Image (cartoon, rainbow, N blue to C red; front, side):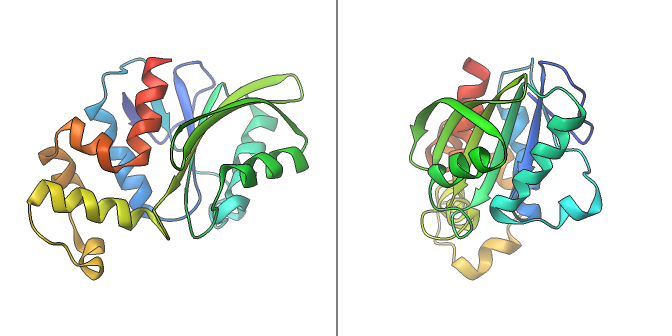
Length: 190
């Protein structure tokens, strides 16, 4: 699995939409080499300015914007729990924006995929709602405790070197603590 900032309409490119933050982009960038799914390229293209400032559920407007312009088979939406608490909110948002949700499946708490159509296009969307109460930082904190075998204070999470931590962590530990890893594992297996 690879990371790219260029999206090409092909079945190997997965469009990444982030609901908030650069930490999620760093996680994606550094976690992808840990997965064997060499076929897939997680693509996080630069969207026009007004889509880049969207947070939470409104970040999905970037997905609709891209669907209007090109073919997308798979997408990954990562959002903090403080913005979206339940995958049903995404389902309702998609329906309100002209999408028809056909099926969905829960992978684990806070992670699921759904298949929907937008006009003639069929898309499989992975949804990762990060954090147990608030944000991805909570998952990173738990992972860091395991990797470094010491207590990590919540206020120190933002100063962690994500690249070093993910290099040091084995894939089993990453899958245990990061919901994002569960989505990527399902993606590479299906």
